[in-house]
Length: 74
Image (cartoon, rainbow, N blue to C red):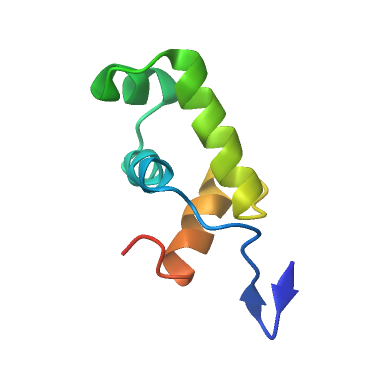
């Protein structure tokens, strides 16, 4: 969804989701994120999925671009 040329975020990201988004932006896979944060692979995948949904993104790359444009991550 776009509003006046800006992407409309469905729901704010949690602190943990922002942390995971940063790691995704650094190129880490779900498996690497899980290991780094001492969480299960399923939890990392769940966070990734929630981030994409909350940002109304098409995929991880799109989520990162949206987050940068919205100053969610800087």
